[in-house]
Length: 264
Image (tube, rainbow, N blue to C red; front, side, top):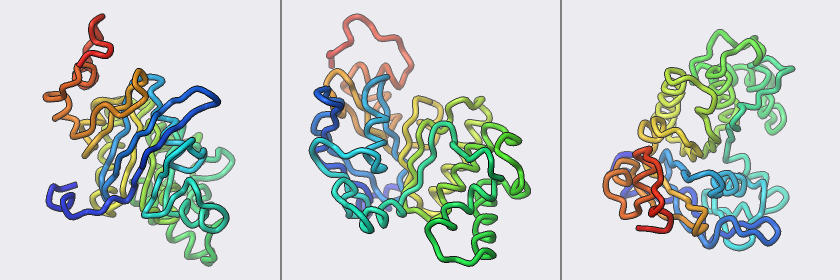
């Protein structure tokens, strides 16, 4: 997001005093942050730091121990019934595997959310589905089965399905996982183009440093040792100027020394 736009933007996501736990095991403890409208926002951290846990709560799969998650001003943690469905229709999700239905053609996958949640006629649904596929560069592949597509094409197809209901926010879980560097770079460009041209907000969980530098406007860093956010900012700024040695090592892809844990 350009700096002048960011200065005037209102947050589309607000996470306030959020705590997540499984039974007695606290994963994240009292964290708060905001995501601005139109940002590409990345959630980072080492293994076991709570990235996936946070994402699952943000898309409404789990309810937190304490705190709130506001999507476009509405708390998904407390909404039920029609109010919850209304919030969920504002978001789309790309799962790590893509999760296209293997028994359905690509265009049938894209049509499915509209058939389930709208009253649009079939010809309108078909037209919109083709438009979504065109946005991700998959025109001409409408009748292919997922097994006939490359890994990168499956990911782009899954993004098209996630956009079927014109969501305000897209959540991506490890979008580059399993892709070669060239295909991953092409996917990064697709994400950036959609964010800039359609003003969609992206929240991305990823380990891929190349993708982080390429697409992320801002990031948060989770640390399982303290169960909190230990850094927030632009990736290059955190790499070069963070006061936290572990954060600098993460962005520089350096091995962790014996003195690093807990050291600033």
